[in-house]
Length: 228
Length: 103
Image 1: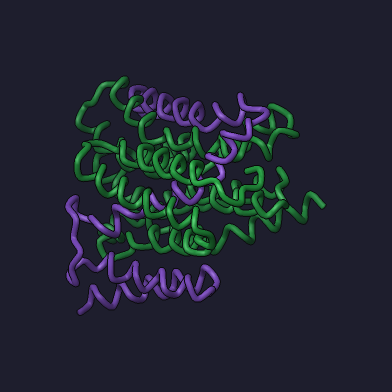
Image 2 (image 1 turned 60 degrees about the vertical axis):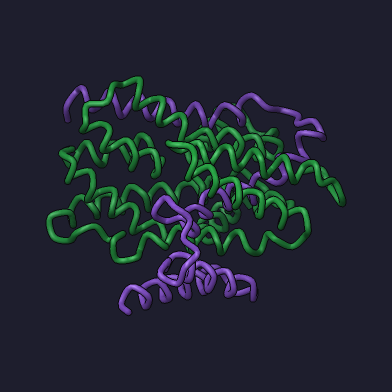
């Protein structure tokens, strides 16, 4: 049963992380181009495993930003994990603390989206989430290595339009969720607030601000609400 | 591997882990009021991550035909709306953006 759930987690995640490959490649290439060694670039993917934070911190590192500055930026970009974790937490309450910690390490936008969809359908297991995490992690590290190797031969793959892979992936996950009025309103509020905030507020605050505002709007809507 | 760079990487790793583990490790029972709010977090976060990339890819609002991200996003959304599997949706979106780039 556990093995089956693990495999299901892997197979449900694969289609959604194909879009991650160009980002891993681009990150590997960028790491080399800003002056990190191959080992340092790959070590960051192995230890941090957070694409957007890695991308944003690379140039900061090379511009000589302080350790505190880089840490704060990482914190800001990753604040959304607090909300993602909170929405997964009730499903994970039966797991042991070490297993929770292990599963936390692998919570990315992609694995979260796959896992919460499964959980909201009433079929959450730790093994499923682990499968999703493991395949995502392997692909991120491998595509980083690919980027480091290819860096000498090709330029940034994202400039060909492959940077659309991420919006395309998340649209494929988002649109099927918009089945009831509350979800449509949440989506509209998140769109307006995130676009407004990205223009008006410097830095990466727009993600967390829009997420809080939209989820609150949804929570206030009421209507047919099963627990979580 | 330079020691200084390794310190930066470790700091980023620790901060990232803390954000990932904090809620999962600390929250046990979620009160119903909070649950109603958290239920909408997936939709909210997916939207917040992509809306600026579609509507304002260069940092300002661009509701024009020259905004390839928006055009490809509309096509992708329509395909997804027609209940196609994710891989078909993404394929359609990527095809669209590559075609727009070549035009």
